[in-house]
Image (cartoon, rainbow, N blue to C red; front, side):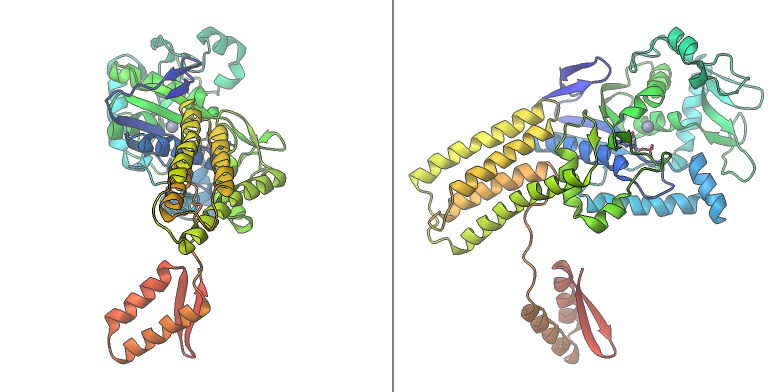
Length: 469
Ligand code: AMP
Ligand code: ZN
């Protein structure tokens, strides 16, 4: 399995630090609003990386944080006249709903910055002790960038170029810094802001130190993969490396993976530009499986432009797979024989080629575009090599292959059959009878069964009503 490593600017063979295990950290969103579909790109892409690794037999410890203390969160809290935690709690919950709707698996751990302050104080103290950080007069603690000799190794920037060429980027008016390149680890509170006590001042952490600390706590000092959108390479990830390696005195992450942007009209989709769609908005127009399909139809390191045309293409591509699985289910219901014929065995062997192609594409730095093309080839093969005479064992094997490959992409391609009205009404009647007989356990069981099949019951004065979820 090869991974393009931003650190070496090359594709490298993936060798985990510990056999059979992967320790992976993905920078998560700042929670002050509903997530937009640009934020959804790293979620979908790295969830697919995780799924493929799990499919290959790795045990993946996947950590993705929520940044729940930040200027934008505080600003929104002031606007609404509530505590900052009310805002972050609300949008963490909403983000989790969106993730679930996009079939993004929950992380092994979703740490929150505000619950990890102790670890941050500890790491900042270590950095001060080792001469990599210092406190300025107002209690702000800065990282002494020039004390870390490898600074710039991820973004491939040269320290002097940074200071000379990009002064405006780095000089932010903080005249207490020893050097324009130094960045904040801890800053004093302003009026009305959330704060924590520290040896330096009552205040809050800088953004970069949060990820260094959460990664260390939940994955250890040295991890396999650190990932996020390409806008995080500099300064966020560069600063994380400086902090972690200076404090721990060992390498931080072995592989650095970055997704390219999701654009709109060829400009980065972002909250600050105002040119974004939230995942929630998109879900009103499209099944989010189509959004997922759309994201994976491009390689994660290629920019992707969002458009109605591409979403329409994604819809028809996704439906092509769904229809094939639907046909297989139809044939399975009506299949006469269950044994595998010699001819069918030979065909199954041929169909195995598509799994090999899929794996080959995924092994090449997670080329999901080619992996999906392999699923299409399999679908075409199935459509032309199955009919009413096909045996059950043969059909089952083909179905298993297409479901396995789709599942690695997080695509749900088997639609459960909708319940028919007669069936629903009959169960409702049975539930009413059970209630009359005071058999509440059975009545509850029926309600649960209906719910699991997408039917919601409502007990009203006019009787029981139902609707589809
Ligand atoms: P933020 O909440 O801005 O810190 O972003 C959370 C994650 O979404 C980070 O990994 C960003 O790099 C990523 N991200 C934000 N906007 C986009 C975009 N338009 N396309 C791809 N990734 C993005
Ligand atoms: Zn981060």
